[in-house]
Length: 492
Image (cartoon, rainbow, N blue to C red; front, side, top):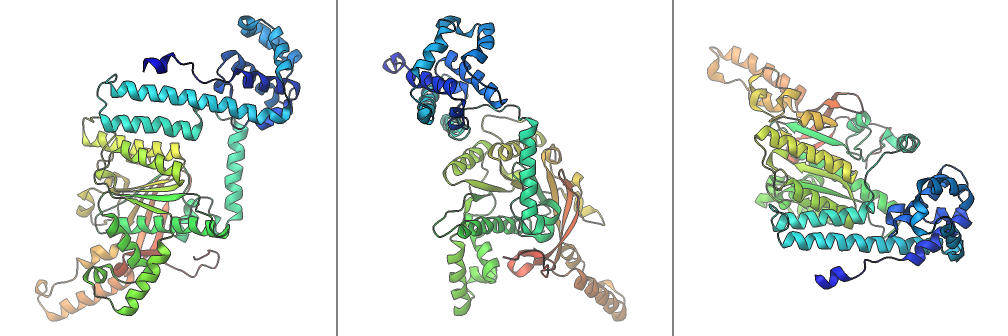
């Protein structure tokens, strides 16, 4: 390590001076570097601050040359260490030509990346030698990957203020996208027409909580959304031409079911062959052929499944970052958050605090990677003790800050499930007529709720709440729009 530390960090002073000379001679050169270069990338602090001073004037529509910069630079005393205003004159003679400005900028940026890599590498080596206590091997890998991910994606620029005009431009672009898309969907489609109409689809940086009691169909509904989003990403890529890869993937973290079980469920739904019959091998040749054909189509989907049980928040974050870097990432689904562990190295005092840390971490992943995150959640048993078993926000298990952190909270509810359990028993009646009347009444009620489900949108930060009525087919554990005859919505 001694030999490494004695070496000079990578820098390109000639390129720095040549670029500044080009900018001072012709401000249009700024357009060739402004999208990737900032003053922080310069090895020389003085050169970096001169670049930022030039950039500020150009961004404000003002001329930046030695005359207009003189007052600013003399007042700050910035040039004292390099010989005063004569340094600017020297920069002008270093200029080779505006046409090379982009090449100078990339040389400066490349040297900065190398300096960052050296800093990260030294940190990794020092931690491996035990400089930081409490970090075991896997933690160190995660920390190193996190730093590399940041370097690869945000080019080392820390978050800061966004000017309102830029935020306004982004808002207009979202509205324009919704206006031009059929169905008013500005985000990624969920595959459920009425849900998309209420929410505008799935939006980057949003954390959506999908909760329900066991057997309500949480996993089936989340899988439907993930599948629909992946299919939409594939469709967009195919529209651009043969061989174009989808510009993002859908990641499912399945902590309860194995990847194979989840794949079987999607196959069952799409091939319309009951999953139970698939497992028993009770299918005919025609169904098997359909099964194989559908599986070939599904194999193209940008759908990734991670079935690591009890995955930690830090491991999930690392894997999402890696996927975003390598394939792109458009949606994350977590099934379900009570099975997760908080970030490695944290020891929450209570289960409520632990769940709170997990939801805050999931919201942070959504914001950092700019993708929607759907997290499934269990509901407490108090639902079962009420006459009306429709869930409420207070039913969120170990709720802590689930409701607070989420941009949307929705519950999946099926009246049919509870009504089925209340089928009249003949022994409970003192006459056959009374039993028959009760049975007829029960059957009428069952007909009304058969194959129906409710998606109760209890909280939505950016839109209305309410109930979305869905169709649920128990045999294939499949959700769909209750009324599929919507002319104004494209059915893929």
